[in-house]
Image 1 (cartoon, rainbow, N blue to C red):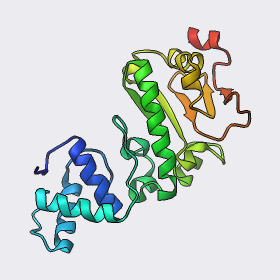
Image 2 (cartoon, rainbow, N blue to C red; image 1 turned 90 degrees about the vertical axis):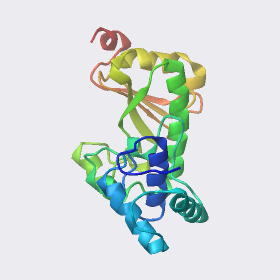
Image 3 (cartoon, rainbow, N blue to C red; image 1 turned 60 degrees about the vertical axis):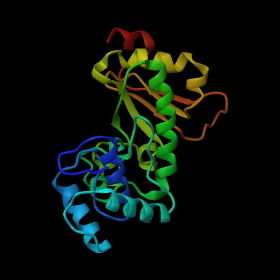
Length: 221
């Protein structure tokens, strides 16, 4: 396999994740652009390889070997990756990534969102995932927001093929799905909040409402 400038897709994502794992300042977005090119060249130079920016089989094998040697890998599932959990406006997270201590939380959220997406039958979009403390404060997030710990995602169906209220109904009325979450935020036209906080009541998640305070008002909006 050869990955080079202009390529996109899962292979590029894996390349970027492994570079980030080794400490390089790179965002995993699945696009092999100029920054990825420079980063690959830097890695090749330090590894004693030809620094041409083309991730050939030798480069990929050595990169994977070194990333594997460090142990834990960045979160990733079939349809979600770390880049989707970082807002482009969150400059701290874009530059430094998500603290490794929260990776396990994000992996759990990804796996549970996979189940929600399968149920919904449409791709899910993450409107807000991890938030750095600076960004969380800027957007008016709660001081103890679950987003700060990688435990939360604000989601909607791509192109709003189904409404947020319909998506939330599906989660709320399916015991298996509702059981995946410790907190659910309802009443917003733009997203449904779900998180994996520990439950205060083992039988039910913490539920709260935003702009529209009832199912009926929300569904009419």
